[in-house]
Amino acid sequence: MIRDNIIKVKERISSACLKVGRDSGSITIVAVSKTRPPQEIKEAIEAGITDIGENRVQEALSKYDELSAIRYPLNAIKLHMVGHLQTNKAKEAVKLFDLIHSVDSLHLAQEIDKQAHKIDKVQDILVEIKTSPEATKSGLKLEDAPGVISEITGLKNVNIKGLMTIAPIVDDPEKARPYFKALRELKDKINKLSAMNHELTTLSMGMTDDYEAAIEEGSTMVRIGRAIFEG
Ligand SMILES: *Cc1c(COP(=O)(O)O)cnc(C)c1O
Image (cartoon, rainbow, N blue to C red; front, side, top):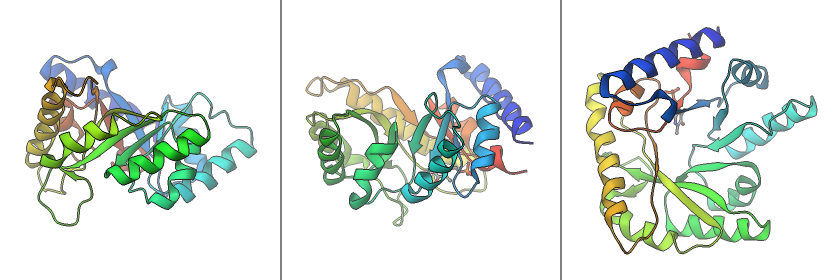
């Protein structure tokens, strides 16, 4: 089932890429395995998934512990933190994750920098942007992003690779498109600021209900849960 789901997702990614003349090799699939047992993570990896995403540090720790207890090789797998990260969890997150998608304040970036310094790591991060006006969503406001990102690029043990957004839940994926477009435009704008001297390359956007629209708008990383683990 998981294997078939992954094949279907890859086919739909290829069609979306074809539509806009992109290479499907430029898209990373992050299989978001929150609430799913280690056995299913194994199945996804055995079906070719190389990137696994979780939204809670504690849950990720216990599942990955379970997998390493049975000597399941996770060292070739990239682990992603896609959920909101509290400052007091930064220490554990830095030990565990290859990429943290959800950095939404300078304060959190500074804490990650401090914890990464302690273990002699340069932590790859994305900055989460609130592209929609919904009050409840986390993420930096579009207008605040260039200033905060400029400060983050000054931190030595943090490497900012790009931007992430979560589009609002809509009935039609076309309605999510403007938010994806806004994120791509922000990346282009920041990359043009000569003061920054740092190129952002990753755009983490698109989930089960809207990943094709996200890819058409320039996503390089889709975070997919239900389409892989359900149905
Ligand atoms: C759960 C989750 C996903 C995956 O969502 P699906 O709709 O199941 O594909 C992606 N990103 C974040 C931040 C999530 O929490």
